[in-house]
Length: 346
Image 1 (tube, rainbow, N blue to C red):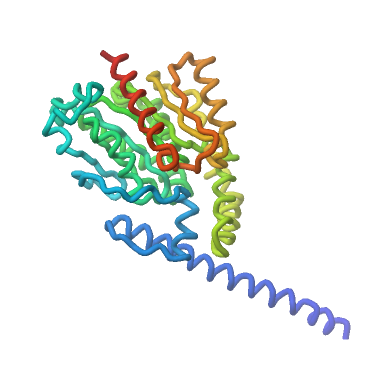
Image 2: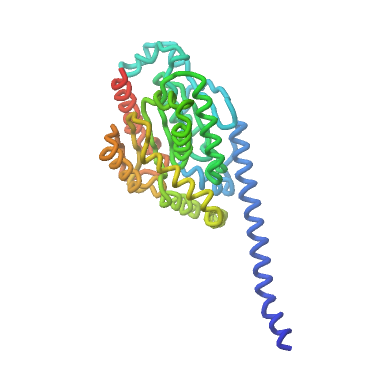
């Protein structure tokens, strides 16, 4: 009788565990299917209606809000791989009269010598959002190499290293000046590039020497910033709550190979072996690219490395959405930085 009672008492636990397993599996299938569909649509250039489900999963990686819908001149895009796109806008270069004094020096530069911006977009960024930033540079005579990190590059850092090497190998194919522009957690891919350049100086040191300037926008540099991503996931829907729990559990089990590796590689951004000037852009209330981390980074660069650092900080602005809320100030900050870099390298 006692044995029978014990078996009965275990039955609810077994049913609960089974239900939880089924529910977890179902949520995982929904999440990964949603991410797959959005990733596939982006790679194929499709515009899809953002329903509740797609919004919840994508907002975990694409925290930025909608930018204004004003049209841009169509960019010339060369698809180098699934991860790399080269964007140019020769329309701006056909008529030197549209350039003001700060732009005219680039208007007659042939494409083979035109500076290239290496732009590490935020995770799962939509092309229409990224193109707003690309336009800032292409309208001033720069080409833009857009790096498109995917969740797998953050979830398994070895993949970020492969992507970093792909970028380096592409940059080895020419000798043009380089400007770095890194967003959010995608700065980790740039950190991986720095690591590879340090390990293989014979091959990649010339690339380091070509970097004229570096822009860091809303960069997540510590574990606090990653926690901010988790918290952002819970603000939207029921699915996001499970996504947060899933990601937290994944990093807990794989921490040695994932989170610890990410944080270790990100320390290279603090040491920053590239000596060129930097512009750091952030806001006081960003929970991901935190003001605490970015201010500490700026202080270290100035006090310890003696680096030329420019800072633009707003009291309030959403993560990776400073261009949307503070458009004119953002564009002016980029323009002033480019002018200072250009004058310094004359």
